[in-house]
Length: 131
Image 1 (spheres, rainbow, N blue to C red):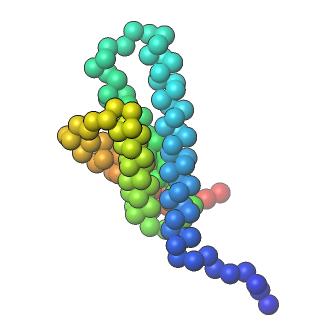
Image 2 (image 1 turned 120 degrees about the vertical axis):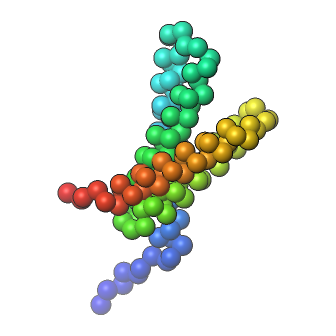
Image 3 (image 1 turned 90 degrees about the vertical axis):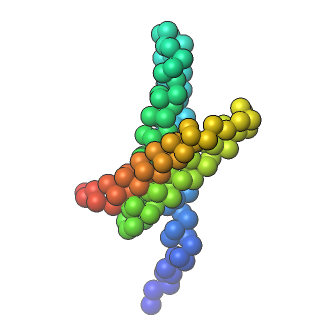
């Protein structure tokens, strides 16, 4: 007689997304620190900082979506997009707390980029073969 219980539906959905968002935040922080170190060592035009930040956010969203989908082993598009969305919300909240302003068109581009990269990472995460 087995006493092992199946996890609830909420745990099966929330746990992979929370873990993916956490990994995405760690990746984003690490990449931003590396970019900041490089930018202080080398003269970089200010017009390049926004595309670099967008690229870092996209990579972090991709990795978070990939991790989330690998944990769930199903519905990679949905889990990856959810991870990208919540990463976008967290990064936007931090940005608002620091700068107290929002640029509408830039936010739409960042949202689409992060959700799309998270979804793409989720699709690849589900379809990656296990060893």
